[in-house]
Image 1 (cartoon, rainbow, N blue to C red):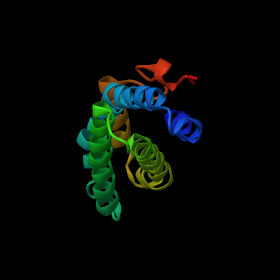
Image 2 (image 1 turned 180 degrees about the horizontal axis):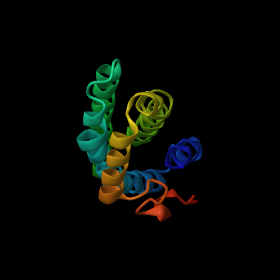
Image 3 (image 1 turned 120 degrees about the vertical axis):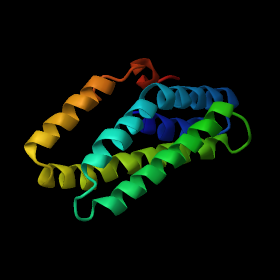
Length: 147
């Protein structure tokens, strides 16, 4: 939802500095409140569980690089200045959306096909213990459309 809100909003508000700053702040808050813990859980729990799977290492390496790039973009958004704020917002939304799709289309099918049930249960329990369900964002108000 955040990516969609950014793309639709930038189309209308590309020259509206207050809107851009607000959306940048909200995006940085979403990153800090939800994505940091999510990425940490992936990197410390899920990715190591996939370490011996054929074809997984290159994909995992790409995803970790994307995590760091999203972290850098969130830092730029947190600073919230500059004429390139609309471009930074779009870059953040584009990369986050592509990252999610890569996980959905490549990572999760590989994991589900090759990780045994016992390990999958352990990974799921540890992720739930650390971050809870991904269906319940910590700051859902950041996903609500604003004018």
